[in-house]
Length: 135
Image (cartoon, rainbow, N blue to C red; front, side, top):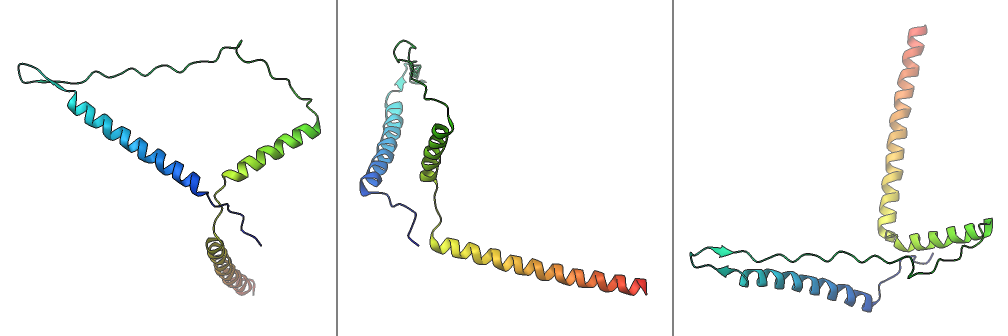
């Protein structure tokens, strides 16, 4: 059976790495600027830098976007929509490797055998005890 897991392209890896580096650089720059922007007052105290207010997110006006046409709600369109959503969700799944799957399967089989052996012994013991009591 073929491998289901997709490997990331080198371009996607580079993008992710560059985003992490730029975020770290921005944080370092902010820390550096906050240390340099402290103004020493005449009495020797240090004035903290003023914090910038974050701009509120812009809301889209209702007039800017035209209303979307609704497709007919029949069984076929609902099924097609469901299958599209399933495909999107399956792309988000992190699939285990073959080695992990085999290891997990071995653990499950061993535990099932162990528990079945334990329950068999307990069942045999209780049935023997009941036979002794009834005689």
